[in-house]
Structure formats: C-alpha cells, structure tokens
Image (cartoon, one colour):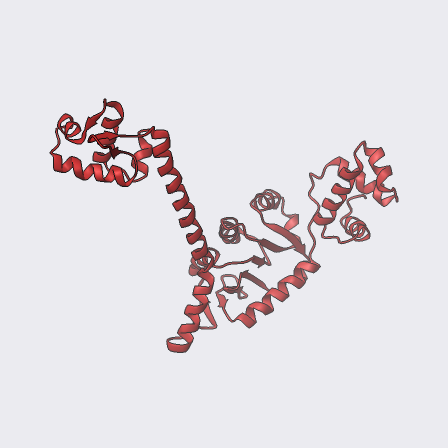
Length: 322
C-alpha cells in the first residue's frame, strides 16, 4: 500500500493525512490537524486534495471519513491505468506517423528550402553511423546483398539486425556461396539466424553488386575497391529499382540445408523421393499424418520450394540424399 497512493498523485502531506484518517477513530479535520501538528489552513488545503481524489470526505457532523482503501485507491489505479493506456495509444499513433512526418518534411524542404540530395557519398569511417541511423529511423524491411563477409561486415550486419529486431522487422540477407567453405561461418550464420535474419546463398559470380535497403528511406551502395566509399541513394525510383533487383536475386538464391537437420527429416525426404504417399510415410516413421504434412510444409519453406517436385529438386542439388 505504501507505493500505490504516491504513484497516483498523492503528495507526501496528502498521504500523511490519509493514513492518519484511516487508522484513527472518527474525528473532525481540526482534530486531525492538531494530532499532526498542522495549522488548520494546511489541513484544509490537503483535505481538498483528498476530496478531489475521492479518498476522504467530510460528513454532516464535520467528521472526516474514508472508504476501504481497496475501493478508493483501486479506483484511482484503474483511472491511472486507463490514462496510461490512452497515452500509450497516442504515443504509438505518433510513432507510426513518424515516417509520414519525415516525408512531409522532405516535401516541404523541396518546396521551400534546401532539397534533400538524391544521393550522397559516405566515407568508410561514417558508414557505421549511417547504418545505425537508417536502421533506427526507417520503416519496413531491411534487405542486404553482400559479396563478402568479414569482421567489419559483421559489425554492419549486427547494426542491421538490431534495427530490425527492435521493431520486429523483416531482415533478409543474400550471401556469396563461397562463404560456406569457411568453417568459421557456421556459428556466425547460426547467431544471425537466431536473431531473426533470413539467409540465402547465391553463386559468387552472380553477386556483382553489394547494397543494403532500409525500407523506403534509402539504399546504401558499396563501391568497388579494398576500402571503398559508399553511396546513399534516396530517390524513390532508385529504391524501387534496388528492391526489384533484390527480389530477383532472392528468388534465384537458395537456403542451404543445415547440417544439424534431424535424421527423421532426412528419412522423410528419402521416403518422399521413393514415391511414398503421406500415409505410408507416417506409418514408416511412426508419426501422425498431420505431423508428416506439417514437416513437409516446413521443409518446403526451408528450401524455398512451392511444390514437392521443387523440394525434391532442391534437395537433389544440395546432395542431401547422396
């Protein structure tokens, strides 16, 4: 009970008078003031606060009464929680309006002030700060196509990931197939996937450009070279073009079967490849029919297959079944 009244707006003096009324026999306000060593004017002012909060009242004979605090304080808490819910709703509405505010701001700059440049050069030393800003302020998916993965790239991806997971955003990355030959890559890939990143892999010769897309806020394009600058592209038309490029690369790229795939899933794929029907697979594996179909659907999702035939082709390409 100590913290609750103060949490709903009671001053220390109001809480002191309220507690005194609760634990004392019926008495008038002057009597309570005398017991507390207060001037009557101070007691009247504090009593006004208690009456406003409907925690105490003066009855006909001048005595001060208070209801059971479970009812009085509970009513205040309910009112405060309702107010907090409304404030949270207004804050959420404001956050959701942020992107449109930014759009209006940029439009205003174009009409009456300096224009936001359609592109700008970003030095290597500034890339991390730009990525952090775009991840935090943009809305929508964060899409990355990278031609190589090193320590500095991992730092950038971490910032991508933090920006995406904080808002439950879609985070997808296309990586070169050659990275799978590096034994250090597996724990890194697992850590990134555990943070919500979807990964697909594409032949190195098909990865001719490296870029990251931050919703509708911009594209960060990496120039060629050992220590290259980046270009930040903001034009909506250019962003649309890079989104279309990423979607095409994503369609052509494939997820790689994890090496810790369960033996049961491997057996299921073997039975599928031999032409077994779902009911026969369920009997062979000792599973329910619905479980078998759910696992097949999950494997199709994992391998980016829309049909069972495509699933078989993808598994065959990766040599899973030998």
